Image (cartoon, rainbow, N blue to C red; front, side):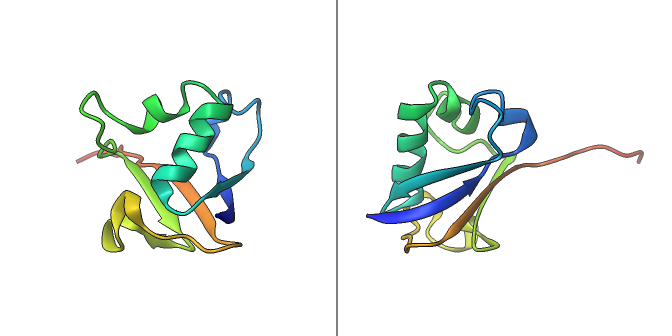
Length: 94
């Protein structure tokens, strides 16, 4: 089981008691998210839609690589990996 650091975006920090970085464990992104949900109820519902798929506006990176270009939620993790959860930001004028 890999020990990783998960960076939590400001909008989700109210679920993590104000913490911006959380230690997590798991072999995959999916396992780490399940662990975060166990410790911080309501966390995963912010990341997943009603069908159990990652929301389109949530970006997750492992060591600065988008998991969409790796193996998605099944991306394998190693000790010391950095995971960043980043909600997409839209705005500006057309």
